[in-house]
Length: 208
Image (cartoon, rainbow, N blue to C red):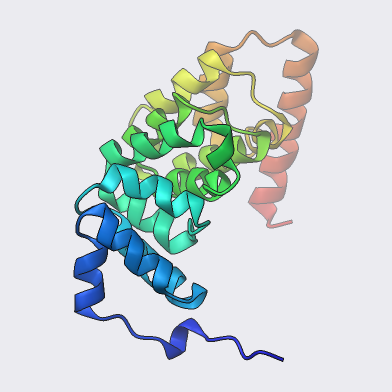
């Protein structure tokens, strides 16, 4: 059986980093000459530098959008993230761009500018909605500040069950208020939500 090289056994060199952050042709040639384990290790260094937009596609063609690469992409800022989102609209590149991980990390970053950018290109699935609501609820936005991001989201989207279930928890009282302001809720649904909120409040108070 062929022995696989572990990333922990590899080291990066400044010379290789400089080539990968330089113009695209030498960078691509160097990347192609590496075994897969080294490609994975060096892939984050293709984010930024010269010809950065072209390198986004190269990372996709070589299926190198790892968690570390996407972390570097998000850290690079809005401009390159938008180029990435434009690239993912191309069907031949979408399957190798790890869009799910990108959405996950953008939500976890709680960067309102990047979240709004993402929402301009893609909808969230019900579980991603719940993750977004959870991140916003746990952030400083809940402490006496208005959350216009979620307010706008409620006004434009019908949220799914995972997010609705969160609204029944006591700590989401502000977001339940926002939801009622933006969505017309029937009397029966208000009764059900009210009962669930009361029951969850009781359990929360007594640690059940």
